Amino acid sequence: MGDSVPAALRRRVVQSFKLQGLTLQSGATSVLAEVLEPYRDSGDLDEIVERIVEAVQQQPLSSSLIGRETVLAAVEEVNEASDADKEKALVVIDAFEIPKFTYNPDQKRFLPVPRSSLSLHSSAGDKAALFRSRYTLILQQTARHELFAPTTFGQSASTDDSNSRFQLHKVEGLLGQTGFVDKVIVLGILTRIKEGKVHLEDPTGCVELDLANTVFHTGLFVESSLVLAEGVFEEKVFHVSAVGFPPPEPPSVTRNYFGNVNFFGGPSTVCAKSSEKLQAMLAENEDAMFVFLSDIFLNEPRVMERLATLFSGYSEAPPTAIVLMGDFSSAPYGPLTNQKLREDFKSLAELMMRFPTLVKNSQFLFVPGPQDPGPGNLLPRPPIPSVLTSDLTSRVPTAKFCSNPVRIQFCTREIVVFRDDILGKMCRNCVRFPTKSADLPTHFTKTLLSQGHLCPLPLHSRPVYWAFDHALQLHPLPDLVVIGDKCDPFTVTSGETTVANTGSFLRSDFEFKVYMPSSGQVEDSKIAN
Image (cartoon, rainbow, N blue to C red):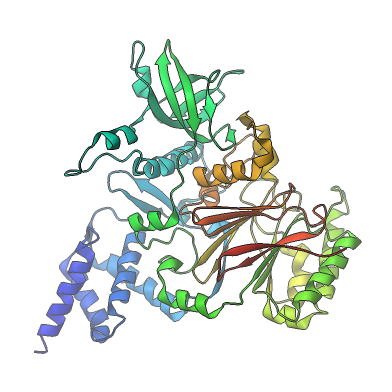
């Protein structure tokens, strides 16, 4: 009887790995059986095995045959996660710590990229890989959408069904034609290779576009954005009749395809959505609240007065976190800028210390703006240097200076915060400006979610660290995207994701956004003059 239990456990472990297309060597199976034997009668056994399988999948595997060393590394990683109690309610994730994945079309899964291979001073190959990654990410989503997915075996192919399905084509398929072809749909990136001309590019080639009679659907069609172009190819020119964005994929659908892979980042090896413990914690935190403000000009007396009013109002019921986005000074850059900013942060610390209940119970997160001190204006931006902020952080232990963008995980909610005047840049780089400009928030939201990217702009307009472009990707789409843009505040919900713009705290008459994680609602708030 004693020998039968380990044998049953071994079969259980082998089967769990087989379900993921992995095969355990005999030595690896023995190691896992020994590790898991104390948990064989525990209700947590399935969860532990699942975590080990996930940890194995996160490693750079050369084949589906799993050896002893790989298993030992995975077990050690899971043990470290358990020891540190990594399922915390609030987790702040730096942009440079976000995991990077590459999509393997043969295996139809995302493979992790070792963090040691990433560098700020990357090679030209990383620049090319940046656009390939954006293209591949959208292609694999679009190809499995119901409008483009091929009819499965045994599915009835009625007339209506066949008319509702489309086939994606590559640019090389057009260039291979000698003359007129029927109307086709091509997924590609809008580029300007020649002055006055717009081209569509994918990994297979590039074709000139004729947009004279094109119908543009909802969105801001900026250079370097991925689009679905429909038209006919004639005389080496693609005459586009309609252009639109790829359909955004709901995050629940993405997770159905790729399981519990943690794309969002953080200490856990599995995504927060799959954690029953975090789901229970979200239910327990019904009164949790996040406050978002942008352009906190600490050199402006009116801003400091309104911050005092805000802190006083929330001191009786402290929010979970108060997120303050830059710029933190409205003064033009000069020789005394850094010294003045350090003094302003010190003054803010003195103001915050007047509200000990708030300081004790709320997390203060500071996100740098485009004009704040830092190593150039590239994305992602690291936190403001500690030499300028140490007077504040030493007195307010709940204060944390973050990268831009920054990700926040609260229980199972995923929040992305991005401070940039991105809407104006997108409007200036539009291939064609929308006719209904009054509905810019809807166009902007559609663009961000369809592109799965915070900044789908050409690199000359908004430079990005090539190897860290993944930190700007939205995959899967989060629950909330908070933008700190100078344009008017707005809140737009599309599918399972909400996009909210805080506006400028001073210029928008002291308006800000409040997010309630329990309900997923974003509320507008304002400090009275």
